Amino acid sequence: MESNRVGLFHLCNTGVCSRLELMQQAAIFAGLPTGNLLGKPIVEMGRPGPRPKTVVMEMRALKTSGISLPRDWKAALAEYVRMHAAKG
Image (cartoon, rainbow, N blue to C red; front, side, top):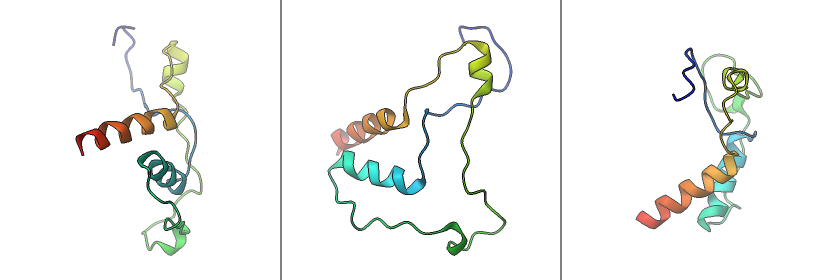
């Protein structure tokens, strides 16, 4: 907001992971076992319509505006898990 740039800015943490990797890392940060987390191909999930295999948000508007990109998803997830574990 302080940059005075206008337009549509998509925002997410940096880095790439699958939904399974996200769940596994969240379990690790929470001190939970990961052995019972299983991946399932999207074609077996019964969702309507085709889904792309991989989708990664580029955040081009942030980059071209000179706005710093957010931190890595693992760092953000670690903080999120810590905050919610503390509320316990």
